[in-house]
Length: 309
Image (cartoon, rainbow, N blue to C red; front, top):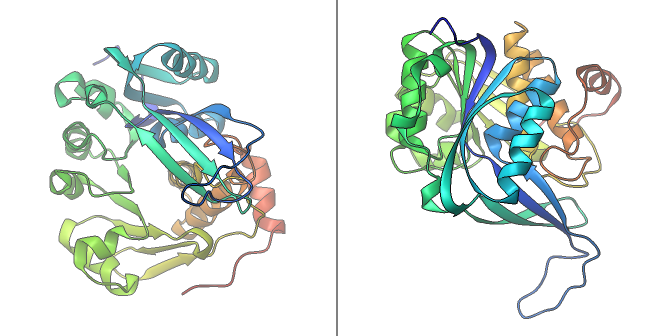
């Protein structure tokens, strides 16, 4: 364990190769739509968050699985360029995860994705020292047994665990009790509690799993969080989005960055919203990641959407 360097944040989760296809309008059934470009770019929830954190000056470690071929080479080369410490496993005779993403003129994206089951990261492939030699852990929960193992190790060593949960993957109940900061997409609290009002569902999820913070990201409505005693709300910043791909990934990276700086929770949420908004002004999951100074300047000059809560 002594030979494993301490990093600021370790990420266990998805990587992907995205083909971004801007379309003049969303295709109707049976139609033909002319396109003018198709850009192959890197993505994936945790992989993109680690890329952002590294660019903001944090020391990062990424653990994930790739297939073989050109996409795998792209991921390896980009992480090496950024300086991210990586621990990749290879699924032989298998393509890496890929997605085709249609982006309409409003910037909203529709994702068509494929992931071979052989790309599943397994708990036995992880090493405890990779996880506990960090100041924080980020998981997305897709490969739930591996994410649950990592979260358990981190929890045992009092390493804070942040979860980016956009779906309820099989076995999620084994993961959530070891999550300190559960930040989900809008629909997850309702799916967990059958309560449509976030002001009811977020406290219920918080009480059920014992997290320090339970939050839901809400797109243009910002983010609402419950800390066990009170709600915290941050509205989204007004931008003209080019592509919303990766907004959630960048939000989680921004939250982690603020948390590791020791900022108050409100500033963490506002910084994360600003980082996500700026990322929507670029193409691809990582196309709008901006330097910290630019994000902070943006926070002082740009308007926010009307409060939703």
